[in-house]
Image 1 (tube, rainbow, N blue to C red):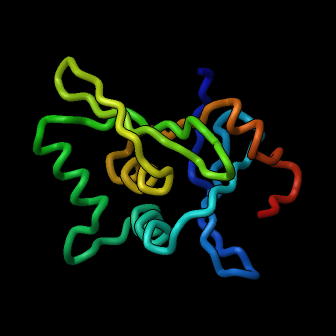
Image 2: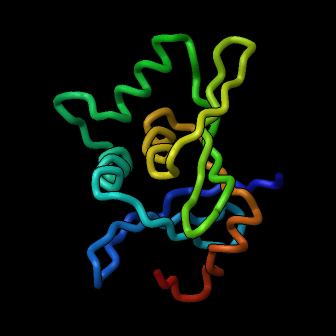
Length: 140
């Protein structure tokens, strides 16, 4: 499976429904990929993007701490599939010589990736199927 690295461009609210949408931009490319996410995950992503500190750990902070406490490191996250308008992701965690591939929602994967500063990838086929060329308006 061919993958491309992306970065989080921003989180926006869809006007009609006030639903959060994260916009991913292909690094060294020309696609924008919008993914609808939940409000809690949007808040977790925005907190990480803005470098805000919270008094108590949020779920993604807890997950980061647990992985690190158990001797693991998050190598990357990959949004690998789009099926019936639902995106699927995997978090790749290394613990010693073992690489674990953990099923996760893209929104949780991105929130964790920001906290551990690991790269985010999208399958080329998913990007081409659901993405929009960056020079065209993004509609969601």
